[in-house]
Image (cartoon, rainbow, N blue to C red; front, side, top):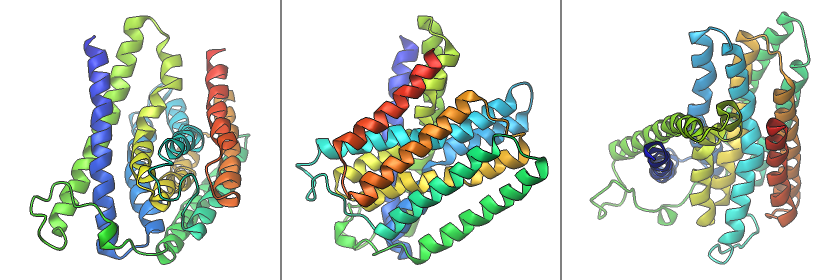
Length: 331
């Protein structure tokens, strides 16, 4: 019972942290004069991707039996969750809040950013999958350098072409700013709220994983199976929680940029780390998750870019892709 309560508490901490973080990151982008595409795809995406990105680094540094498997699983699992569950939930929330959203289920996004994010992800994650089928070590090292360089180019282009800057009148007041009479909150308060939100997200995600394992042991469910299916959701909850708040408010560029930007980040820098410091020997589960992630990315491009709306078939398809992986793990 205690573990179940802590599990629920950790979820609440993640949501609270996401609310603080999204509010602060909007003000940060406004203060820096960044377009909403850059705010969603860079500031929000990289910040909330930190919990799952740290896992493979810690695993390799600690070493020991199974460390490479843990690292590779964390690296390929994150994009899979983003391209399936994250898209499914955000699409579902868009349907549920269609009446509240001025644009309904249609999208109002910065098209160049969405185009760049999805095509970039599909290209580099497909290459990462191909490299996992067996290549010489020098090829992996060379590819790792290319992946790092590619993300730097992506970041530069996103910053230079991130769309319109969000106007002050569309921003909610900074949550921790008690003096709402001033035109804009102080920079120190924005940074403080940003750090508090990010800390709550990371801390809540870690607690979620620990208590999830504890609950699995107490109810007699195989820890490995439960953690493979559910534990990755904890490290991806920041992206989904942030995007939920933004999609509800009709800020589609921020909501989708937070997810697609994280997909780009996860398919380049963590993959480069894996290519450089592991054998990148992908097992059947890793290959399956990567293949399903690519299918989810293609569906995202069809629905979000070509159709410019959340469609029921696309939302169902994203859920089915994750269900296929759950079924494979269970079998």
